[in-house]
Image (cartoon, rainbow, N blue to C red):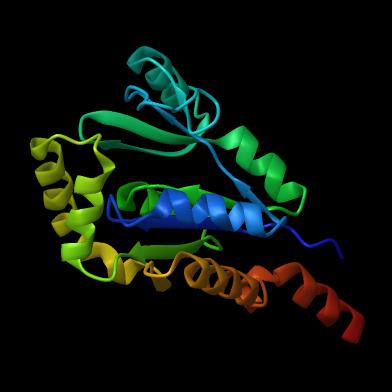
Length: 204
């Protein structure tokens, strides 16, 4: 029986290193597909449309919402972010584990629609380290950093909704840990209903 991919939802405070972690995971192991989100925010320096995000207008995004072309979407710091459904379904059918890097609001929406999704929350070693990482980016104004920290306080209230917490201190170690968690998640009975059903039918 061909293994179907599972949907992996990764959230975390802004500056926790989610993006770097996901890129490294996809580079190190070939069974992952990193979903590209659609957003109405402006590209940062060095970002390309179709690589980091699909950059669209507010009108284009709202059309996608109406046409039900998104797995989930959320509004974060006055911009829309969402996951195009077509790409996700294609990769899962191919047997790839699809990684969605999304905000907590969108993550809970995905879990509601896809109960077998695996929810992971990435945390920094400390809040002092988080502040330092945000400041070192060099792309954020003082006001934006404060907004992100304020948002982190709100997000901290929803961490218990996730199945696993991963502390991003040492990048390589964190990637190995993530891969181990996902590999183990494939063996959960809830994600093997077809196999269980087949076994039961053969036993009758």
